[in-house]
Image (cartoon, rainbow, N blue to C red; front, top):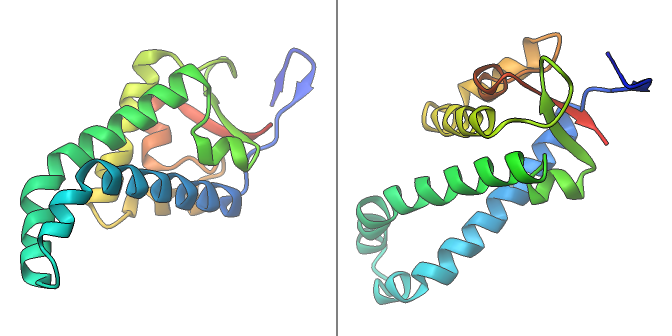
Length: 145
C-alpha cells in the first residue's frame, strides 16, 4: 500500500489487542468514576451489584463506548490505546483520515462485535488486510504510525 510515497504497514494483531485492553481499561475507569457511588451502594451483595450493572449501566456504557470510539477515530485517527501502541486507523479507500460517517459506522460495528462474543474481532485473524467486522463496516484499516 502506498500513500504519498509513504509505505503503510498493517498493525499487528498483538498491537491491536493491547490497544483494545488499554481502551477498555480507560472506559472501565471512567464508568467507575461516573457510577462509583451506585456501585458502592451495592456493598458486598454480588447479586445486587450484578443487577445494578445489568439494568442501569448497559445503555450508558454503550453510549460511552460508542462516543469514545467514534470521536477519537474521527478526530485523532486513533484511540488512546492506539496512540500508545503507535497505530492508527485510516480510510480503506484513500489511506487518509477516516470520515465522521466512517468512524460512526466503525464504532457501531465494534459494539456489535463485542455484543456477539467478539466474533467480529476474530475475523481479523483470517483477513488478508487484518480487517475486523468493524473495520469492514467503517471501511477502515489499522496501520502502524
